[in-house]
Length: 372
Image 1: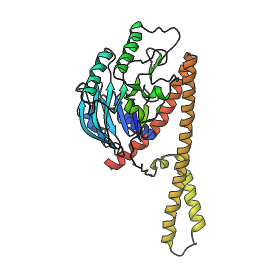
Image 2: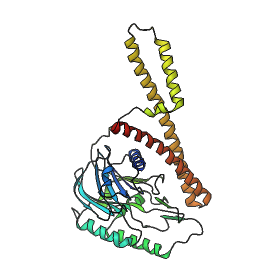
Image 3: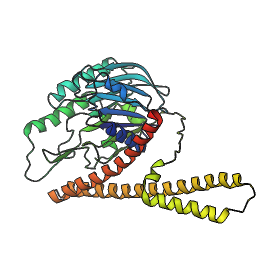
Image 4: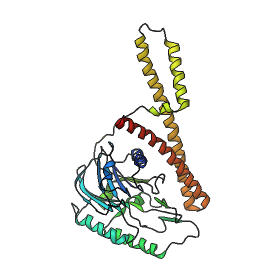
């Protein structure tokens, strides 16, 4: 199975935001990642490097606008044969093989004007240049800047009026999607849900404009879809799981959390545990070297247990906040109010704060590894 994620990241020129993204992708266990609004230029895209995603394709704009990228994880069973990179940083088309199946991937970041003309041009390029035009395995993902259904994919606060042009855009968007026999993979998985991938602060509206579309061949391989919460970006990541027939097994690696020593309470616990160990064991063995070597294993075990406890507490708090955020978003969808909106903003801020704590740890590790 290959897990695909599309995510509008609203700029990645900050080192902290790149770390936030990697944390997010790691938690989602993403194999193929579609990123929009990277805001890289031709040179800065090289700064996005990670052992988790060693392969990357990037289309950039010379003025650090727009920008899209496709990241492939180290375990991804996808093999790329050819690529098309838009010089304006609006789309990437990749032709290759998912395990043994020919596939075409397209990452799209549509402009906020003339969306249908732009999307029509990209779709013609995808289907004309596809490897198998009769039975194409095609997956399109990204920020389409268009609503598929006004009734299901938009939520506005009372008093806000939806412009007629936006309603016509939704109609034209549906016609274009049906012309190419594409299927909204998330909507097929959740046919009656009202979930939203983007929040516009100026317009006080929630919309679903981030999609994965696939052909009937792709639909047959669909194993699941999901939409996460909006946290540090103003978009939510959307995921789909595609069957690949690959037997890749993920490997996990553990590293000691050196940040424990920076927390006064934990540092005092370690000091007391160390003192207790020597008080109990001095004189119990003849060779002092054995006592010294054993204390390393004991303290390592205590650090692992403490780190695991802190991680459990952090994960539990994140889950609580995520559940609260989901409940508040459902409440807002049913009974729109500014009070609920403020609670949503607060919950997102707390989730972002938790993520930034993990980012600081990763930044410390990066400095130790490369600049020590």
